Amino acid sequence: MAEETQQSVVEHLTELRRRLFWVLLVFVFVLVAAFFVVKPIYNYVTVNALSGVKINLNAFSFWDGVGVYMKIAMMVALGVTLPFTLYQIWAFVSPGLKPAERKATLKYIPYVFLCFLIGISFGYYVVFPLAMAFTGELNAELGLIETYGMADYFKFLFNIIIPISLLFELPIVILFLTQLRILTPRLLRKMRRVAYFALVVISVMITPADFLSAFLVLIPLIILYEISVLLSSRIHRKLMAADAEREAQYNS
Image (tube, rainbow, N blue to C red):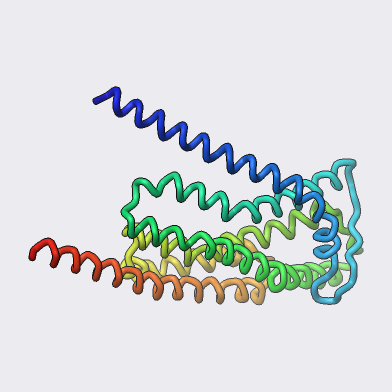
């Protein structure tokens, strides 16, 4: 019995290593390809989204250009390989799921990628321009001359769009956990106040210290949570109906 258990663990580790190898291989391939689109992306995101004026960035160290170049390529590679990575994770855990759960969880993968893109778009086109406008007005009031370092500019950009893009995955995570019977609509409604408070804290943390930016982030997050509750209720009803049908067939 112990020998069979040990063999099973070895087989799982071998399978996990194989799938991680494929993820790493695809990531490296996409990373190399991403270097060809870094310059257009750099030119695009260094134009002020509100005024359309090109932002002049400065390198304050020898490695600023290389670091920014690599960060942009890494972001592109992570985004492009996200669906493949999620599929490999699903393929690894799917043998432990029921056929219905296996089929249901697979369909979430495209939506994860879609929500990721929507989150990036919202962060870049809505929150980031507001953050730039707020900091620019504050610097003007203090009589400061704005000289942007490219490393700091992209750090500021990534610190906004990455958390927002991850937060936009909230509905998918809740639906996935509902499908696995870890979360229920009743629990989500019971946790609403706590969830709202957490969303307020998060929206304040990832935006500059002005009410408008935090409010514009908070509203879609609350809407996403409420949509998640509604979708979770729908999934939960289907699960309960399937359980009742199986029980009826078993009793008959």
